Length: 391
Ligand SMILES: *Cc1c(COP(=O)(O)O)cnc(C)c1O
Image (cartoon, rainbow, N blue to C red; front, side):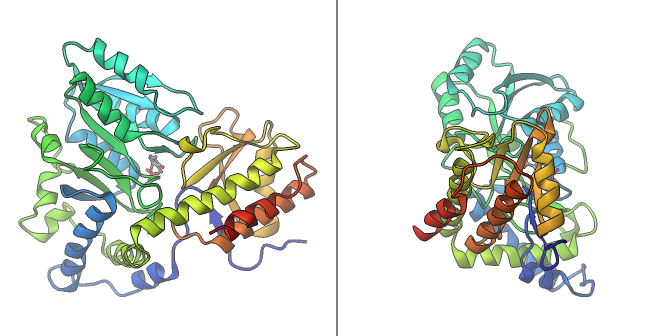
């Protein structure tokens, strides 16, 4: 017997749940791309994107996923032979570094493993050792989605200032934008990359590079014509926003998504994500009191509010994922980048996620643990409901 008929729930760390108003905004005939409403919609996105990123600087919009934003950002900063320092806290930091290598950069990596945030002391030592100032940019992932580790990006800026190092600070906020508090200008971030399919609740397909004048001034002499952020930040003609045809329907979808963020209020959005994350943690901690389940990140201060990585100790993580999907219509995230992947799973709780949705997801997991005879502590739903009640 399957209880999966009904609305499916994709609780993975991106793509996230798409709100009905976003889907409805996209369900339309192709709009005029030469003039009119689409131009006004695009113009209206710019200030709202900047306010979500908490920046007064520039934003370039690209047609592509997060990997496209990675390459776009690097292409505007790095020339072959330049040195970058990657602060890896999981698979995504490593991946961004691999892309820099592919573009001809010389990549140094401080690898923090899969459970720990950026170590500011190690960073300070590394920068102090770079007397010649070879490092042109630091690549830091705010929330690494593979591990659910959150790092202190303002702290990275403080180390740069303390050591007097001039490297650009580049942050990946693909998983955190609109979920975990991030303040681009106040935290001294020079370049930030993000995408629309996680906290911004729009189908994958557009991504963003935010950058300040310091980063713009550091642009190498030769930049890929397609990735160049300059025509996109101040386009003389509309097509330059996108270097070709506009991603018409995505723009309407993103407009509706940003309206949701605006009407809830960014602080309320962050507070909701924090509460939902605490609900998830309370359940997992209770399940873990008897049995193999454990939160990947020990210190709550270093845990993402958008995604939670859970260790299961053996391949039962994969069995649980299969069970919740087949029997309850709940799809959980794979243990991406972990060894072995089957021993981990992730719950995405980014974007359009309410208290009842998360209680439902946790209920499906609780049922799966029982059905599969995976040892677990009792009372997880009770603990989760106490957190929701305290809101
Ligand atoms: C999802 C994600 C990416 C990759 O984005 P894609 O759209 O899948 O290319 C990169 N970094 C982080 C932190 C992410 O969460």
